[in-house]
View 1: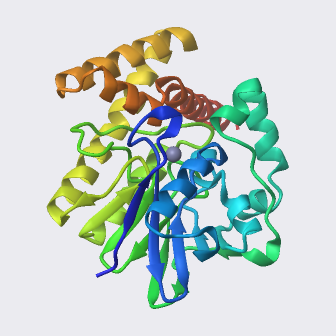
View 2: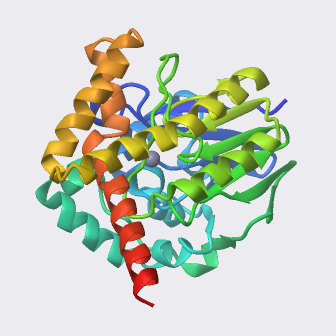
Amino acid sequence: MTKIRTIDLNFRGVLHAIAVYAIETSDGVVLIETGPGSCLPTLLRELEKISIKPADVRHVLLTHIHFDHAGAAGWWASQGAHVYVHHVGAPHMIDPSRLNASAKRIYGDQMETLWGTLLPINPDQVTVLKDWDKVEIGELVFECLDTPGHAKHHMSFKLDDICFTGDVGGVRLAARPLIDLPSAPPQFDQEAWLASISCIKAFNFREIYPTHFGGVIGSENVDAHLTELAKFIPTVSNLIREQMEQGKDREAIIEFYESWQTERATSAGLGYPDIHATFTATPPDVSVDGVMRYWKKRWENEALAHTD
Ligand SMILES: [Zn+2]
């Protein structure tokens, strides 16, 4: 059985917020995700603890190109690793200037501390992925499942009866009884996401590995997790839509959503550190921004359709 190592990046000093998965193969080590550049020292230290040197890492699979998943990919490429990424995201990994600029606009001075900067990747070191592509590495075959919803450019990686689900498999921080929805802008799309969950569910996976955080083990647990996530998507989306329909502004909706989430977490038995960890992995303001953008775009499109 394939041994999957779960590496905790201790993102912003918080345990179980962002994972990188490492697998040793006959053709070197594969990383699934790299985490952000800001966590690279932690990643290198954790890899060293399990006797993996940077030069051992030959392959990097990215579920999508957000900073918390792919931020250090360019660094790994500079060390000789080959990078595999969704065809829509690939151009931004080769030339990350637009991603860096838009993150800099949002995070300003905090950018380096929070995320680090994406380094460009030589196109020869990038394999561009499409739905159902197979990535053969040593004795392993990863099958690519195009799974939009969190982002348009999101791949999940099927490896026999397990799956690395990136963010489309939702968020559940290790051993905590709380599911969460990383509905970050700009591409949250509830219909696409629900379709992706149906796709993942149909495989009846024995284990899934969301990036935030750690494996969901056992096909019954996987099924329960995905069923709950599929219910939670319209719950969150409609909750925020209702707030928008009441004419509340962004700040008021964030305040509402944060206290709704805190109450949910508290009734699930979570204390402050766990709630803090959950909010570090899925900040409520970011989730609200993603859902608000989704509804605004949808309403605009509906209005346009009516004027035709
Ligand atoms: Zn993420």
